[in-house]
Image (cartoon, rainbow, N blue to C red):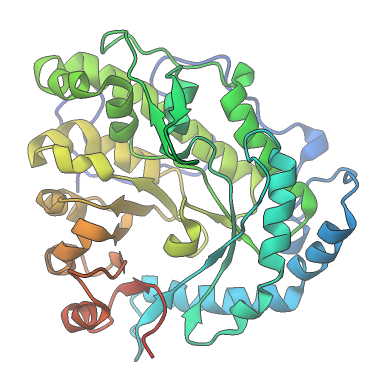
Length: 400
């Protein structure tokens, strides 16, 4: 099983990181946020409904109060968890006689999520509260989701100081590459970072509401390679071949930050509700993480296995059950590497990546689940023909 130690090409068996505080092997960042103070300790961990801050709640508007009555309803939690149990059985290889369909509902806010984040969150909660009946569907899992993703796929880039801006249509976030050379990236001071403060602010407000029904989707916390190429562009690809030590240094700095953010969310969002980005279409049982591997399509199998796979494995191992990788392009050259990555428990494919479903289904391990978004090149009928419904979550409505 693959694991490459830092600063070495040594390959050794990979194992999950032990439970407990994570020890960073890179340069220590003394600006990283401290653990929650004793005054904000979790209540009894055995009661998911009680996992909110032990502090007085701020006043909520009348509409939100009504919405929260629905979003704290134990009957809806029970319906959600019944679907989660079936999903858990799928992850444990317990074959059922029908395919698993997933089609969640993400809350929509009308306010500017960057300028009025609390108002946006209240509106998103009010929105999903109107759709509690979706959880009663016995054939399709339709989880209710709150997902706050400031700056789209460029959250990490902005924390590292890149200029991030909207181009044309709202939500079309772009980033300018850094002017500094590869090998000079420094760990940011999260305690003083306004971008992270914004993301954290909404997460804490969500917990403060005491809503137990909706899942909470993370912002985009991708593979380190995605952020690395966002920050350096083509120069990053060149450096991976011409200056691998400099590239590896910065990749580790990026990965350490992403791991720190995953760890913070794990410490502050109830495990029963914590989900990856695009949670309405990538819901996993509690305890699984996820990373976006879009840029891995640009790498050879050897380059990915040497420079990136150990970082992806380290990141997924922050979560007790490992996790998922998202793919959307031509990535099948990495199937042998992912087959050996013990912490990789699921592979989600859409668009071009979905067209290679057969290669993933037959090339990956029997305990690795496939999430497939149907597309013209891979319709539902073809998905079922290849998989027979085994190890497969189909993202979308069940055909009539």
